[in-house]
Image 1: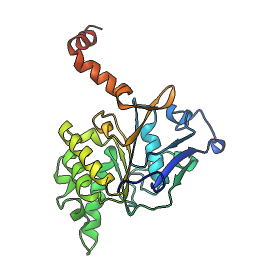
Image 2 (image 1 turned 90 degrees about the vertical axis):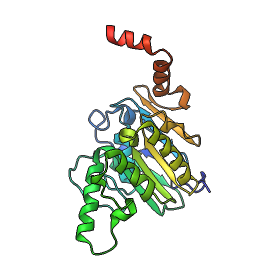
Image 3 (image 1 turned 45 degrees about the horizontal axis):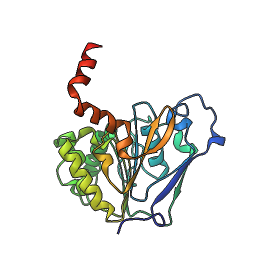
Image 4 (image 1 turned 135 degrees about the vertical axis):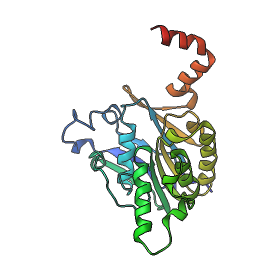
Length: 251
């Protein structure tokens, strides 16, 4: 059965503003952080959206670290670092957890997924036990396209009863794969899973049992899909493509 507000894994996140040493330097000068106080997670799917540079990925990363994940991604048990580039934001966040603990979890991020794949191969080379890659479909993630390896993890490694945090998973996925991802999200939601997703894809934002937070220079606002800037821009483009292209090419 899907999670509800009484048994979700993470309930909300709060910025401990009184502890911040400076407010005009990264990451605290990002628009998303400047306006952050407390926002609640949906028990099933929460989306963080907005233009580049608003701070949603930085916030998502901090939430993942505060929830117990490795900064570069992977499961709760992954503990490696190829480049220490994450911000100090998680030190000033309080993630309020629910009474239930997830039995599974994964932090999936596009920009460091290569490092996760490399770490899996190293663990399998160094260990005499069961192969980790078998939980990802059995084929080396480096021997697949970026999109195939992404989807292999999502399809095979996500087991349900889990907390899954994903940063721009659509980066390597075709529109058809994005629709397939929506279907898989629904399967996992039915298996007591909770998702927090940063995305630019209106397709991925379409899951009905969800909440969308749009990050902008004006702060963080809860939006319906059809009222988000991403959806409106693409709708305008496809409704009147020739006019949009004319303005783009003649400016």
